[in-house]
Image 1 (cartoon, rainbow over the protein chains, first blue to last red):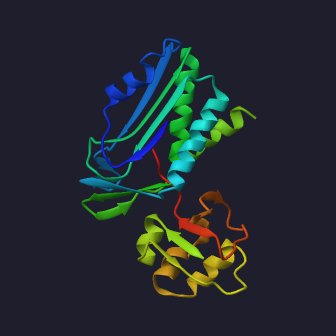
Image 2 (image 1 turned 90 degrees about the vertical axis):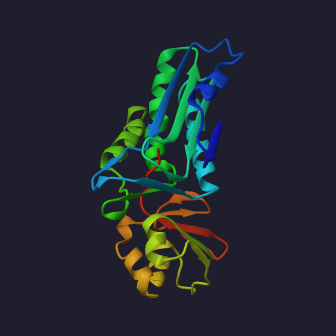
Length: 152
Length: 83
């Protein structure tokens, strides 16, 4: 399941819902991304996440589908927020469930690596130098590409 | 043609989207960018270096050599920073 929303989410509640009455699940992995207060330009006061409505949902659905193709999973949950966020706020939740730990752990990492470079979001940080757009990171590109080559 | 701009491309152009009628010689994303740059101002500033521009045609990520048509939705933006 994917959700793109402005409001916060309750991690505990979301994780419980995924496994309720699903006794075939043996492993659940989770990643929560947060707004960090330190940027290259100093301490930030807020971060605005802009996205491409419509395409965002399509891209997240593609990523979810790809995870299901590559691993034997019971369920995938991706929640991505947009709008104005403060340091400490949650940005993204990725959770996967599977009968065994390896599939849930690996697929969780795969999804977050793909999100970094394939989900149409752009981050604007407000800090001491005013507003600064967050650049894409070469290390994020490499992390995403790694999943292309390992399976080919 | 429906055009959408995001991130610093949107900020530099100054609007989030518009509907334009490009001339016949605009056949792909490269030529669209060249044509938009001729409009000057924010367009020139935003699209100066096409290697920094990423594109989606009808909400599918693609490359700058993709052919485009009047009925397409074309989005121009910087590299994505999700997660």
